[in-house]
Length: 224
Image 1 (cartoon, rainbow, N blue to C red):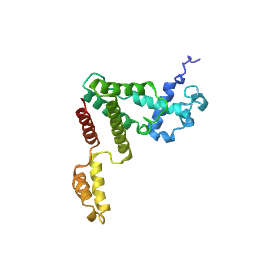
Image 2 (image 1 turned 45 degrees about the horizontal axis):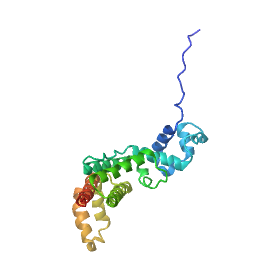
Image 3 (image 1 turned 45 degrees about the vertical axis):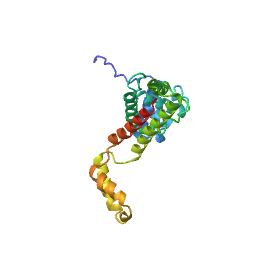
């Protein structure tokens, strides 16, 4: 009689809120948040949909948790340090997180329930501005303009199909052909898009940092 052999374990890791949220993020990264349903998430985890409700109350609670995981990937600024460098770091880190999770850009500030990572990042930004010497009123202005720029730039980048300067240059050249009949009345488009972008392209990273530094330099001039 042959010796008994141990069967390979097929036990899945236990279901937890963390595991549910991570799986939901992976699905949203792949297919978009609009395609995420509790049924599809349960299938991905190999469980019944009803078992998810032991860990998340509903779809909104699921999204709240997913958004907080995105905030957990952001490097918060350190109050008391070089405030411009710290806020620059936070902005770059935020954009990077939004590019990893492109579904999140329209959800980051509109949630009604904020998780601990979300609150930590916001508190750190406010603390950095206050430590730099901004008044309460100017702190609100400064945070508002930064967030509008960061999220707006990320949304614009997500909405565009070209990904590299070379892609943009190719698109610009094609546009010069596609709109040739109308370009005689659009000299500035010809000059900028046809004359510059078609040659140099458009670099997301460089343009983001240009605008970010413009904002931070402008805020510095408003310090007392």
